[in-house]
Length: 85
Image 1 (tube, rainbow, N blue to C red):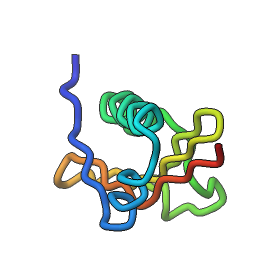
Image 2: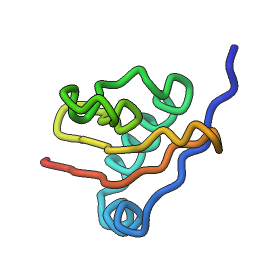
Image 3: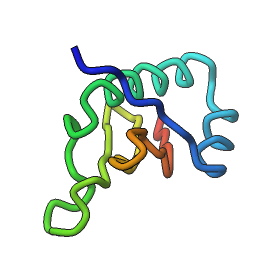
């Protein structure tokens, strides 16, 4: 079993997370937990960009979490959280 990679939030993502309802915050944590165990398991943000395979989006219903897989430091960097609910 590979160890989970920690997720770090950008200031913008952190501010968005703080404003979400508690149940949505928990959903974000669950999505990041899944992503941390398999960072490339979610679709690439722009599949036509050959230089951006580490920019990923995790979509679950009305929730989208956009993150970068930081391979050298082995963590996920969350750029944005979008809640359309």
